[in-house]
Length: 120
Image 1: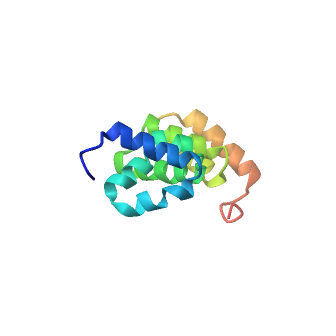
Image 2: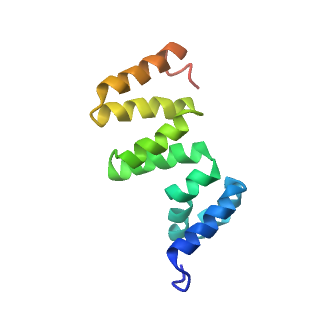
């Protein structure tokens, strides 16, 4: 990526493009790893409104860096709209040392689905 444009300015431009739809960010994702990182940054994902992307990026960051507040927030935002994210959110709560809340989340998931096969 060129160093002529300041990083925060590039992020803001990509964020504004993402507001009109996550599909408009496809060329940036395909361009190079630097642009991919910008597209999947918190600033851009919050504005793009793509909860599935937040879920996938939350899982990726959790696997790469380990569970953190950032990954839990991303999974939590996706959990409202996606049952798989809800399930992962509950499991990460348990892993992060909050088993009581994680158990509550998973109990609610199990009330909706008796087993994981039904959730597909």
